Amino acid sequence: MIMDVFSLERWKFLEFSYLKKWTIFGLFMGSIAGLGSILFFLLVQNFSQIFLGSMTGFLPPASGTEAEESYTIVMENRWMFPIITGIGGLVVGLISTKFAPESQGHGTDAVIDAFHNKNGEIRLRIPFIKAITSAITIGSGGSGGREGPTAQISAGISSFLAKFFKFDEREQRIAVAAGLGAGIGSIFKAPLGAALFSTEIFYKRDFEVEALLPSLIAAVTGFTIFGTFFGWSPIFDISQSAIVFDDPSSLILYALLGLVCAAGGVAYVNCFYKVQTLFQKMKLPNFIKPAIGGAIVGIIAMFVPHVLGTGYGWLQIGVFNDPKFFPLWMLLGIALLKILATSFSIGSGGSAGIFGPGLVIGGFLGAFVATGFHDIGMFESVDVSTVAIIGMVAFFGGVSKSPLSTIVIGSEMTRGYTILPAMIVSVVITYSIMKLDTTIYKSQVTDRSESPAHKKEYQIPLLKKLLVKDAMDTNYPSLPITSSLGEISKKIANYGTDSILITEEQKFVGVINKKNLNNDSDTASLVKSIDVTTPDESLYDAIKKISTSNTNELPVIDSYSKKIFGIVSLSGIMRIYDLELREPKDKKTRLSGST
Image (cartoon, rainbow, N blue to C red; front, side):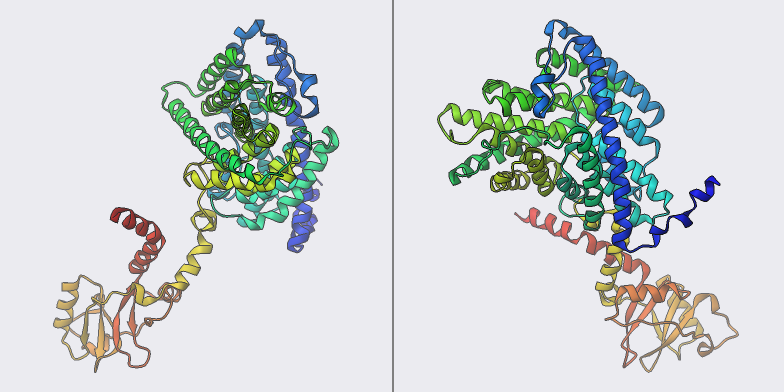
C-alpha cells in the first residue's frame, strides 16, 4: 500500500509541460523551504537565548522594528564569551565531523560545488545536520549569517525530491538552484532578488537562465509562508525619507564608496581563506578546530561584542536608527573585526553563512565613509543610512560576483528602490576593480563553458565549428598500388604505423593494414576501402565516422579529384580541441609577456 502511494505513476506532473512541471515543483519546494526557514530561524533564536542570554546576560539586538526591544547586555560576564563560543564550536565540530563533514563552512559554496561537480546531488542528511550545527554556531555567538545554511538546507531537500521524482541530471541541477533561491528568498524576505541570486551565484560572469522560473515560483512561495509567520516588514526598518537620491554630485561619494568596498572585499576574501588554510594545516583533530576558532571570536567579543551573531541588529541600531550611535573609529573597527570574527567562526570549520556578515561589513563601511565626509563638511545632505545600504550592496556584490541579484536583494531588504542609480555606480566600481578570482565562493566558475555540468553542451558546438583541415596531419605514409609488399612493409615500419594509404594514379583507393601483410598475397588483394573525410567537413562528423569504423584515423581527400591531403586522427582532433579551449588564455599569456 505504501509503495503504491509513492509510486511514480501517481506523480503525473512529471509528464507535464515545462511550465506546469516547474510550477508544481516550485510551489512544493517553496512550501518546504518556507517551513524550513521558520524552524531554522526559531532554532537560532532559542540557541541564542540558551547560550548567550542565559549564560552571559548578553543578547545581540535583532534587526527591523524589534531591534530596540531585543537589545539586552550585561557586560559583567564578558569573560564568559570565549567559553561559550568555544563550547559552541566544539559541539558543532563533534556533530559535523561525525555525521556530515560537508556541512561545515558557509553552505552556499557547497551548493555551488554540488551543482557543477555532483550533478546537483546533496546527501539527505545534510539539511538536518546543517540546520543544527548552524543554529548552534550562530546561537553561541559565532559570526555568521542565516542565509547560507538556509540555502543548503533547501537545496538539499530539493536534491532529494529531484531524485525521488526521477529527474534527469539537468533537471536535478535546476531543482537544486530553485531550492537555493527558495531558502534565501524566505529568510531574507527578498523573493525576486533570491531568484536572481540562484541564477547568478554559480558563475562569475554568467547566469543559469533555466533556473529563473522555478526559482521565482519557489522563492515567492517560501517568502509567503515565512512572511505569514513573521510578518511582511523588511529585514531592516529604515525611514523612507532617509533613502533618497536627489543630488547628482553625490555620485562622487558613491564612486569613492565603491573603491572602499573593493578594498574591504579583497581583505575579506583573503582573510577568510588564509584563516581556513591555517586551520586545515593544523595537526589537530578536526572536531577541535571549530572550538579554537570559536574561542578566538569570544576573545574578540570581550572587547567588541558587536561581532557576535549575525550583526544585523547593530547595523539597525547603530546606523539606521541612530547614525551617531557609533563614533567614526568604531564604525571602521566593527567592520574590520567582523571580517576577522567571520573568518575564524566559519574558516575554522564552524557552520554558518557569509552573506549576512558581508552585508553587515559593507553597511558599516558605508556608514564609516558617510560619517567621515560629514565630519569634514562634505556631502552632508546625503543620509548615512543611504550610504550604508549602498555599502551593503556594493561590498557583497563584489565579493560574491553577483552584482545584479545583490542590488535587488538589498532593495528588497531595505525598500531602498529609489537609490538604484547610486547602488549601480558603487556596485559596478567594486565589481570591476576586484579581480575575477577574488570571490568568497571558490566553487564558482567563470561561465557555463567552464562548468562540468555543461561540458557536453559546449563540446558538440565547438566540434561542429572546427574543421578537419584544422586537425589533419599532412605527414602520412602512402604508396601506389603497384608497390611491392616489401616496399609497403618497409614504409609502414619507417613510419611506425599500423596501416598505409594506397593510391592509383594519385587517387586514393584504400588502405593496407600491417596485420594483413603476407608473402602469398599481391598488393591489390590487400587493399581495403574505408570511410574518408574532406578538409571542410566538421570534426564532429569526422568523429562519428571514426566511431563507426575499425580505425583511429581517416584519410582526408578531395571529394572530386580523390587526391589525398592528409589524415585526421582522434589524437589530432583532441589536440586541436584542447588548443581551442586554451586559446584565449594562451593569447593573454603571450600578450602579457610582450609588454
